[in-house]
Length: 145
Image (cartoon, rainbow, N blue to C red; front, side):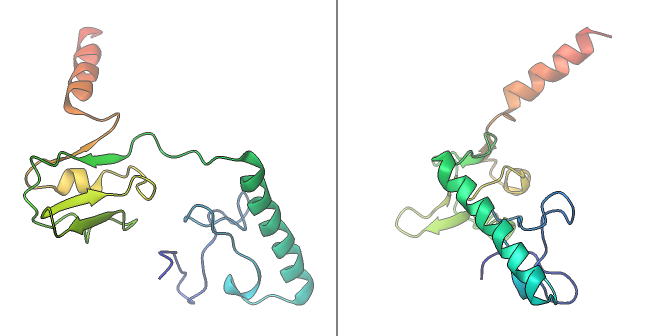
């Protein structure tokens, strides 16, 4: 329901056990207590304090930074096949019945490129990875040889 990763035991996974022990792969969601694994009360309280500090730092910043390389759909080219929707690991793609087109929620998109690679009509494009940019990079590399 929350699109969060779980380990083999069924507990929520942290982003990194040492570097980010209360952060998850879902931005803005933090772990505390027994949802991450069995803990005693002092460990739970300490982890809750760390999670609260992480949440407070987000509030103090006043803004959230998003990935610059999100994907977007060229609406005129979208065939409405819906093949991209189940492939998105961040559930950022939805289908608008009125228009019969897919739509990407840029707030949820992390720029993984799965939908871009899988789109049969080529209507999904990714910022910072457009064809012209890739061709220019290839030409620059080949020019230096």
